Amino acid sequence: MADIEVYTTKVCPYCVRAKALLDRKGAAYKEIDVSGDDAARDALVKRAEGRRTVPQIFINGVGIGGCDDLYALESAGKLDVMLAS
Image (cartoon, rainbow, N blue to C red; front, side):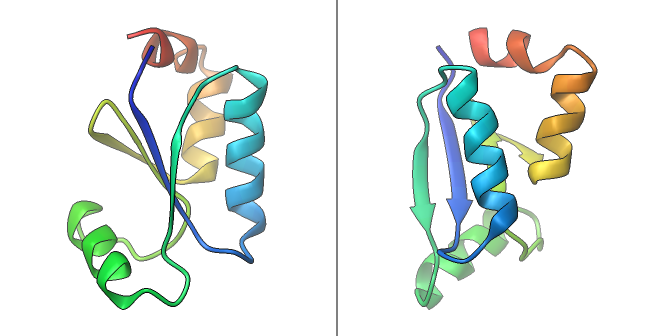
């Protein structure tokens, strides 16, 4: 199973939607809440190459982007392959 990290905030509907897809897939993930945590937010921005929006999703250490990107992978039939690796 893939190593998945999801950077979120408490009031983000896109985070909820992304986590719901991962839950439906049965994928275990580590959620990193950056709400009000400047150090965690700075680490996210550095890791996500300047992107500040949430969610930011990493699968096996590779940034795939946000919620729309996750759903695009699903629509293209590529998400299951990534989750299985």
